[in-house]
Amino acid sequence: QVRLVESGGGLVQAGGSLRLSCAASGNIFGFKIMGWYRQAPGKQRELVATITSGANTNYADSVKGRFTISRENGKNTVYLQMNSLKPEDTAVYYCYALVDSNYWGQGTQVTVSS
Image (cartoon, rainbow, N blue to C red; front, side, top):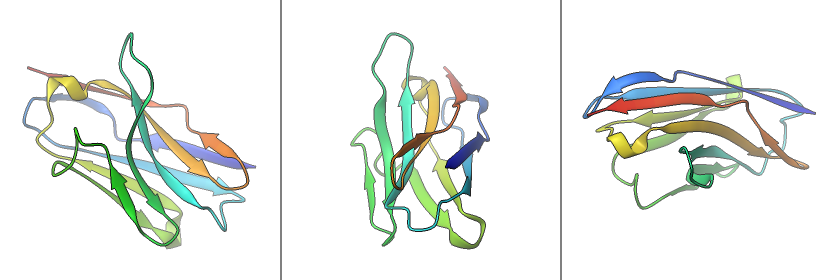
C-alpha cells in the first residue's frame, strides 16, 4: 500500500510561483512513475508532469517552460515548481504514483487570481 500526501497549494496572483510537494510512504520502493495531474471545475483530470524511476520527465504542453518536476529520493518526495502561473492553472492538483498499482493523493487546491 502507498500513501501520497500533497502540500503547498494556495492562492497566488498571476505571474507568481508555488511549489507543490508530494510525500510518499508505504511500499513506494520500485515505483515506475510519479507525477502530478490536475482537475479544474467542469473539466476532466489532465496530466501536468511526470517523472520516471530513471528520472525521465514529461510535461503537458500548457506547462512546458513554466513548471518543473523533481524528485528527492531519500525522502520519497516529488515536487512541482510552478512559475509564471496563469489563471487557467487554477485546479485541484493530485499527486500520482504507479507502483504495483495506481495511487492518488487527496489533492491540493491551487488558485491563481488575475
